[in-house]
Amino acid sequence: MSGNSFFQQNDSSKSSEVFAPTTQDLTVPPVGEDDIVIVFHYVEKKNKAGKSVKNILSEQEAKKMLEDEKTKHLVIELKTVWKDLSWKENNQVYRESVYYNEEKGYDEIDQFTYREVQISRCLKWWDLKDKNGNIIPVNQQNIEKQKSGFMAKIVKRFDEMTSLEDEEIKKS
Image (cartoon, rainbow, N blue to C red; front, side, top):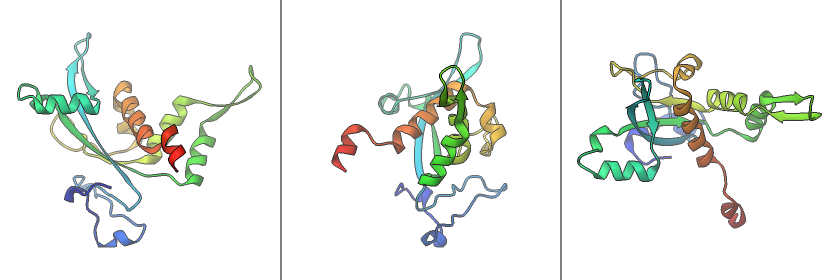
């Protein structure tokens, strides 16, 4: 968990309960002891069709742009809070994502369903803002309204943050 006071817990943080933002105050992130805080950086650009799209930056791209006086104003920070699933919860996500492939004769994971279930179970809060500067509440409807490339990169980064690499597995 981040040491940033923005993500500090209330006095009930010693228990597994967390405080949740009310509809009146979506600026307070609900960070629990086992939650994961991930900060993204993105820029908004126009695609070939002239539509505005959010492009998630790599950590290196964000650092470079933030250090450059000419580009730092283009970078938007997105703070997110994620639930770190237990073994049981993670298995349930997998179960909900499985389908029987008749052609192959065995069960397979539907990657699209997996991502949808994973993000709906894990993403607890973000400070993503609408065009008027208001925080967009995290719910299935608002997640589904986001562009697929934007959400795919967010889920990918969450996966990267929560999975062990081969080298990390060897060390444990």
